[in-house]
Image 1 (cartoon, rainbow, N blue to C red):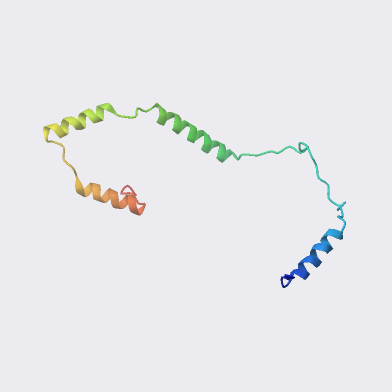
Image 2: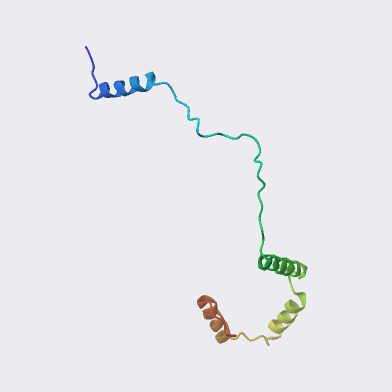
Length: 107
């Protein structure tokens, strides 16, 4: 019994063609191995340097602040315990809407 797969003759023909070809080399390109001889450089604008300085100063100030402002916490606890603490729901709602819209009441 002889099994034949339709189209296999074309595949065999292409395969034979690739096997008989000799590889050619392209002498027009060169590959450089090892470290590059040109030095990379970056220039930072004075504005970028100033922004970096301001950012570093702000980060340093933020790190110096306590995580919890104990005096504010104690004041609010006293207000709540004495029943004097009043929530201004209208102010909270306005601030929430401004935050969502990206605006500020100070504008």
